[in-house]
View 1: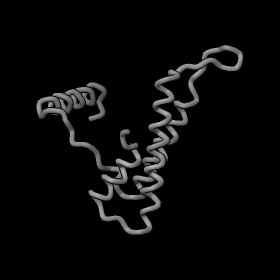
View 2 (view 1 turned 60 degrees about the vertical axis):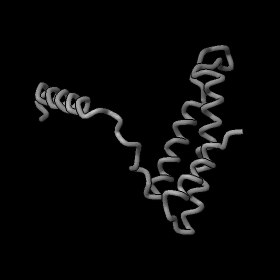
View 3 (view 1 turned 180 degrees about the horizontal axis):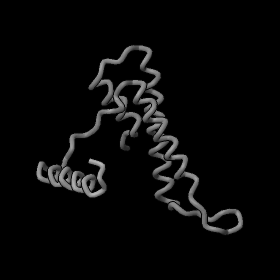
View 4 (view 1 turned 30 degrees about the vertical axis):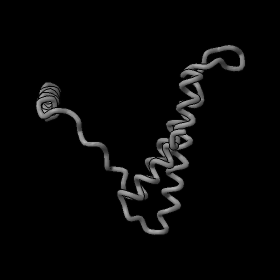
Length: 114
């Protein structure tokens, strides 16, 4: 059986950082939140984004706002640990980045916000 997202997170964090003892509770909390997100994402994939309400009407699956809240909670925990700003390296090529910057500049000039 594959390891949970939370277990993988704890392993990766322990390998990458030296945390103080008081930060251990935050790591455990983040791992738990990741496991809950993983479970909700699986349930959402099975049930879909729209479900039937009590009177048969279509309604947004309540897992969607619950997932959003859990993701915000995770971001807050990561911020407390001081690792929220780190992300994967930008995979765009230098040419794609240059095109994007030129397009952004052109849009600002067009709308006079440069």
